[in-house]
Image (tube, rainbow, N blue to C red; front, side, top):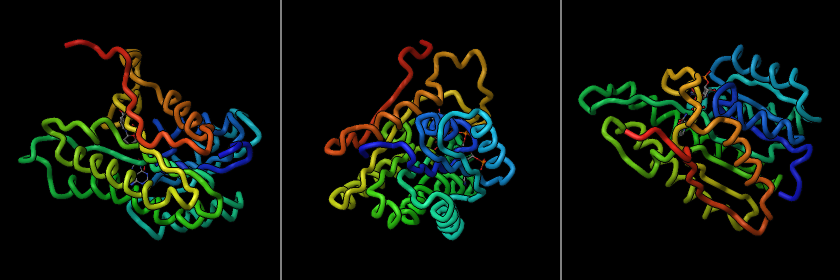
Length: 241
Ligand SMILES: NC(=O)c1ccc[n+]([C@@H]2O[C@H](COP(=O)([O-])OP(=O)(O)OC[C@H]3O[C@@H](n4cnc5c(N)ncnc54)[C@H](OP(=O)(O)O)[C@@H]3O)[C@@H](O)[C@H]2O)c1
């Protein structure tokens, strides 16, 4: 991408946490941003907060859409194109986790994690593929270090994030010759509302959402000939046990 000024990014789960941090950074650097949530009020409130901050020339728009529903994703993408004329960047970020021993993880929890984190990333790419071909755009998934390192209690989350990492890398190979860039970002602990966390002073050692925003900006501004395809990012000095 030669320049990001005036371009449009669609960020699933952009109403808070990492997605909001990415939206904030991209808006401040001259892009339009669409932030989504399952909840209309949350999506619209996040967009209003971004617009009120008068960060740049671009605009923020909030849209309610559930990444687990392909038709809703496609409709939200169509609304974005109608409003801004194009989609240049899709960040598949929406996600959640249920953690526990396999004996305790329920069928509903398993399905929610896989449907949101893995199938949601696939639906988001599938629904935006033609738009990204036209714009010669960028697809970025927010996987996790849990997409490369398994841990006890992580069956559903590890499976979803190993899946996202594999899916995104394979999709990168599918589309790289057609001018679409694809990257997988794999963060360690980020200070967000993930899994019921409330960001507070004790989170200071964690990656902050705006740091992931800066990382996305860096990827978008990379020379078009070069593709950092998979990026691990971790807190520099986590607490020692
Ligand atoms: N925080 C970490 O330490 C960390 C580390 C590595 C990777 N990640 C990944 O980063 C991504 C963002 O997480 P976060 O930490 O920013 O968590 P967060 O603060 O809880 O934000 C999650 C976002 O996803 C949205 N969302 C959840 N389910 C959705 C669905 N079905 N459809 C549309 N939107 C949905 C939420 O909105 P609603 O609930 O209103 O729908 C919210 O906007 C996730 O994929 C997570 O796995 C997080």
